[in-house]
Length: 214
Image (cartoon, rainbow, N blue to C red; front, side, top):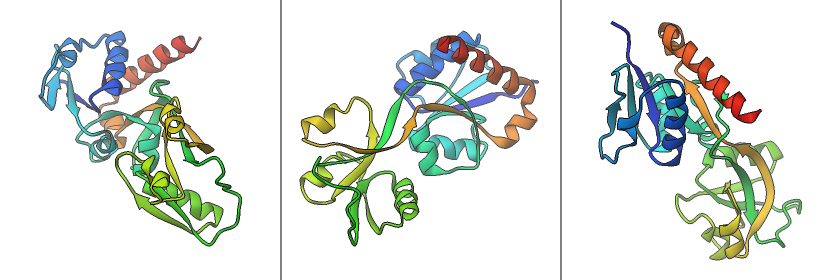
């Protein structure tokens, strides 16, 4: 009997875009798109299973082998720093990971310490350590933009898509750290033990992405 391939997906746009690609690979995912509170579902054939988790948990499930394959944003992948294979840039859910604050805040000005509000604690620490800048990293998980507005922080580190939220709060991008998008990740053991299914699937996904780019 063929091993079941398990995908870890975050419900919402990432899952919808992922399912669209998998449908093009010949996987019948009609059940996955139906409104449901189920956390574990299978495709019509029963050969593929889907577990729905928080975006930040996707790399954890894949690293531990509970899921063979996952789709996750590059920002989350950088923050979690899990032992998985990052194989394909899927090209959707594009955004920028940026430092932002009031436009008159000069990042290049020497200062004893800079206060940074963010949910990307590890990325922020690595970034400012690399700059040799002392930083107080203040963990926040919602309305990050409030940090500078209420004086909790000097700046924020967050993902930026359109930048509209920043503009509406009189903030702006001060520095862009990295461009992000959704990535296909694979469990290292699964890539070997389930190679007969996973490798052709990865090849098909790669071809679909390249055809969209051309």
